[in-house]
Image 1 (cartoon, one colour):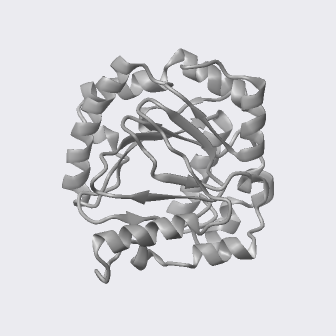
Image 2: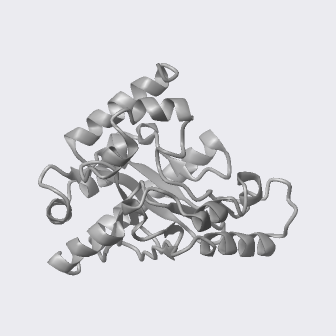
Image 3: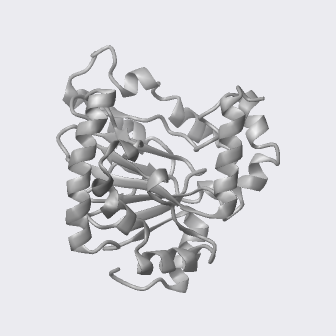
Length: 268
């Protein structure tokens, strides 16, 4: 890593909900991971079409192709830094809980502004998954620490610093979310040229009060509270290959297991 973690870094993460580790991955491992990503994007587009944004099923790759991903998850210096930032119980999640994120092959598009979990399920299921209380679980440092590690330049992710500490949405945030729906963000009706669509997406991202882009260079790693406001905007002309995983704990793995059971049973 380029520099050691400091007390100021820890305070920044606690206040803002994100932190970027510069040059977190050595160059030789970046090279190996890029080879894995090149194979993964072929599989993703074969399985899910040209607009596929990720491959979560890394078991679709040959065993030798995930060796570099496993080496990333086991990087000693990086795991020590994450444990210093969070708790000694944290570690980078393993291959089975890691995705690779890519650029779309065709049109540019963006996700809607969202907070993870809360905005990804029905109100009924949300009430069951978060039976202990949204505010209680969202404040638990053992949960909801997400990681993006770029293998090429990646300015795709936008984030609202401090929104992890304020879970009641402001009127401005609600307006920003509703400024465009998913159909508009994907230009599904092809109402705009690619240039017009890209401008719309930039306006949408910048329209969220306080939003900043998490600009990563190759080998940089962003860790962020996924229950904060964030989104992603993607263009086909900028190559992207980014590892997407979490700083996990036994408690977070237990939460995931319970949530998957609830959702698999239709919320019951």
